[in-house]
Length: 177
Image (cartoon, rainbow, N blue to C red):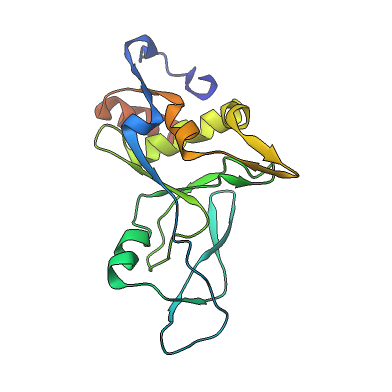
């Protein structure tokens, strides 16, 4: 892993290699119809327009028919990773940590939620590294000018998983570097 080379005090040979599906839950978003106008049975929702760098660009409000249970299921939570899985070659694999203070409904991107074995900031770093190394593009399929990656293929990708304490140390080093 190229960006981790400067860390001399930590031996990555001792890390467990795990499939992404073993350390995170990956889900698609709400696929219900979206409308531009209000109606008595429709609720307004803020949706993500696009990801630019590490920023989330919100779009115009859309109206959808979504239950309270579905709002809980499809609402982004602080610490979720938003992953671009269906886009142009240059955008494929872009990911960002969700940290907005207000409710946003999860629709066209994949949501990746780290489990107790991995810190979400560390997982974001690992996903970014997989993308930079070309691993995301290697498993992608292409239809016209659109590239896409399936959830099952993502789950099979392998990442190094140090202990939570070492993950925090590596993140501290990466932030200072």
